[in-house]
Length: 193
Image (cartoon, rainbow, N blue to C red; front, side, top):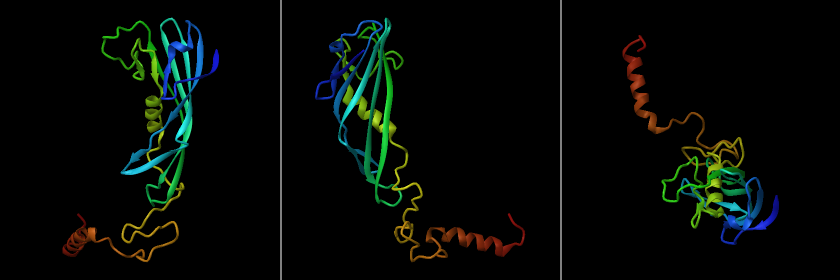
């Protein structure tokens, strides 16, 4: 196994440079700049933006096994209270490229790695793979803390700092029509629906 090879600074790795023979493996460290991700109209910035991505390549008689690994953090607003938040992500993903595939054939998710480009499908777009893998690793919700209480729906006060001035008995005006219907139904008959 060879180690410590660097990819091109633009996030591409020429797999021919690894000089793999069947049964051999290699790893390469590729510098990649991660993009800002927008979720719900809010930007989440990777820290650090420039990371070293580890790519492991294993060659067999039938194809190439590819593995991509790196870690980063994203900073941006909490999705419930808008306070600054930070989430750490760890990426560890794999792809496979079958050898001897007809370049003119339609792509197949089981046999073709979409990040390998021509000529001869040996230029690995590590930057695009890292970007897509980072987005898949982001949790569905990003909070400033696990028990974030969010903002009051009526006055917008941060409920993490204490109760708001609205009080618990205030009724949301959007429920007024249902409240009127409940009163009318309970007033007309003692028999529940």
